[in-house]
Length: 138
Image (cartoon, one colour):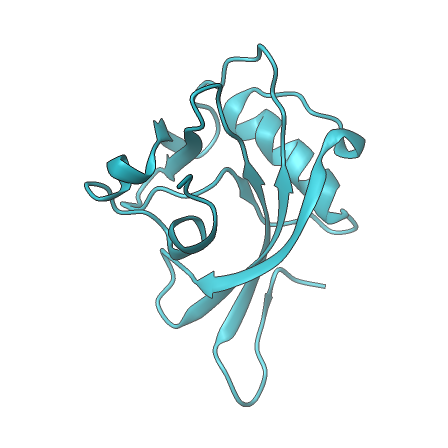
């Protein structure tokens, strides 16, 4: 099973796992991957045989140095939005709330920049549709 699929009637879909991580000030953690311009939720595509929570646990460790066991992620459901970096694609995301406690996220694999973002900050940043439409704090 691949993370990209197509059907005969609609746009291609990219399947990912994504995190909602909020700090004590209710800011959302977003990342910008190398070679891209849009900020998005941390996460990524599954490796063969991985469950969505296993994918996110691995991606958080690789991208941000955050260690969270799959069992400690809380499912928020599946969400679909236009893909930020792949025109003509939809991203289908299994989204999980992740409590990071005192862990400090750091830029890691594939990540160029990370930011804690409020709704007001979003007016001045390019933010992926998935995060902008569903997860930015009020």
